[in-house]
Image 1 (cartoon, helix red, strand yellow):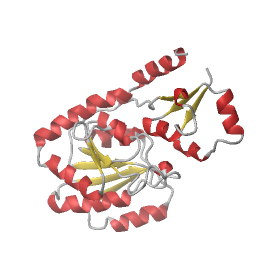
Image 2 (cartoon, rainbow, N blue to C red; image 1 turned 45 degrees about the vertical axis):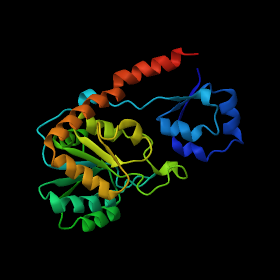
Image 3 (cartoon, helix red, strand yellow; image 1 turned 30 degrees about the vertical axis):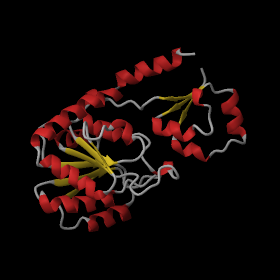
Image 4 (cartoon, rainbow, N blue to C red; image 1 turned 60 degrees about the horizontal axis):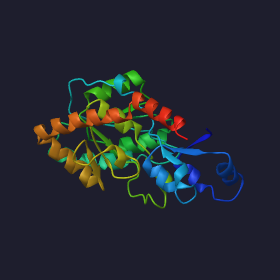
Length: 255
């Protein structure tokens, strides 16, 4: 079968032209990385040709260590497609810090943009915020394993129906964090809603106040925190390499 993998930036391509002709004649199945992405393409591609195949995450490589009072965010600081909004995370952390001063925010990710990093460092002045730039997977793995919470703010204040390219289409780092026993508390946009069952294995937020409030609630409720942590680990396995391989075989073998 002829397959084409789709991500949201392709939505700028209209029904006319070479791409439209090729997709209607030669491509039998279009693979989307989330239901969110699939919904974006429903108006331009026949629904029967659109299939969802979630990206694979090597969940077995992730581990859980003794948890520290750390909140981790893993995202590029200079993402070319959409801003990850680390500035919003700092604002939310300011609110949390007033009540829970023992916690630290780890802003982790790749970057070559010194101006962005410099601005964020200034914004975080006086707060226990640590920047971990361009970490190796070994370092990142260790930070995941020891962090208690995972924050992500991509898509903040974005209208995902008008600008779907500016939100998270899936959320691989979210799954990695869950596999490591980090409770995900993220902005309620894009594919994140397909990973997180609100109140069950994590929390979906509409604003920065909710980021701080849900985190504070869990800090104050160890029993609830342990339950959500365990469910996050279990549910992360849905996106394992093994399940990905099974789903690929199913797609290929289905007419």
